[in-house]
Length: 392
Image (cartoon, rainbow, N blue to C red; front, side, top):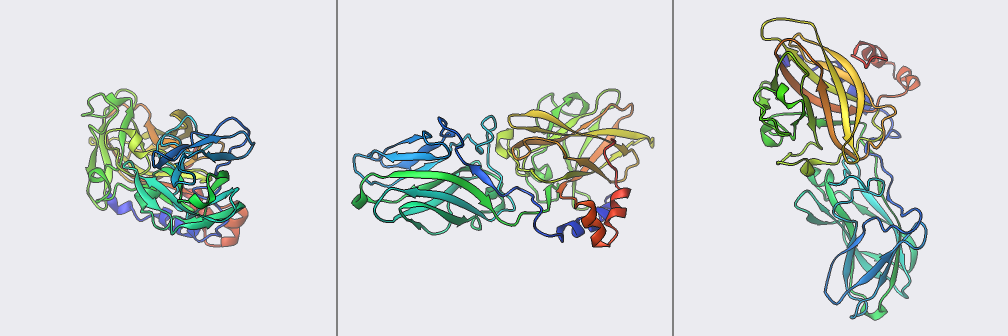
């Protein structure tokens, strides 16, 4: 069945990947701005000696103010966003900040001292909160200035799950206690235009299950124990691999979901959230097989649970029950909070017969505007007409 794997999708994605970088994937832009007043957005003193302390406030619109109050004036201490805060716009969602495809963070920061102070910018990443310094210390001068730090030292698993981001202010006893102002923390870089969120390739986490769980309608998965977990799911190692399960007939099909591509590890907290903002389409490559040789079609709904698991549908596509892999395309137009997606999923509609389901790939793409497609002159528009689309 895997012989269908190399398809027109591969060719089209190669065309899309060659487009200009002005299209966005994981959106570079502001992560914190402290708009308004009265909300520090869960920022905290992260670490430092017991003799160091500070008060944090948002009394000035558009700024986080950190006023040092250390008994040993000017002692070193670190500040960061809260471990359960993903970004400013997502107070309801917790997990890790997804910076996949991006290359830097920029801090708009300053202090009221008489001389420069060395600052170590850092993240703590993955569920183990591994500390990673973002380049060498930078000399932060008095007044408000912009400082860019690289993300190149982070592994893919760390980039996709930044638990907290922060700054470690080095000792400055000669300057005494200072007042620091942070106006913005933003991400930057030339983003991706194609992202394979899930591949289920051999070698991916959890023996190829790669964070997949049975989300709801659990009884549809033969062998599931009734829980929101991985029982009843298996890895089909044929070719490069796919997720496989048996979907019982006679009632609603199963709803399967994924996190950010890393391991589920017993709880969805370990692989959420995912930033899918500015992608235009999701393409799910999957097959449905009737072991008794029957045909027909199977309705498949794409969906997302985002910003504290609010359900959002991406429409319905019909999948041929023919044992072949097909690319099901779902438009993301009009969907909200796509920068804090807790789970990405598919929901199978009811079917009379028992089916063997395989999911090979979950891909997100930026489809170019029609004028750009025409300018390419390489048949991409013809390819898009042949793909399965969400009904109007």
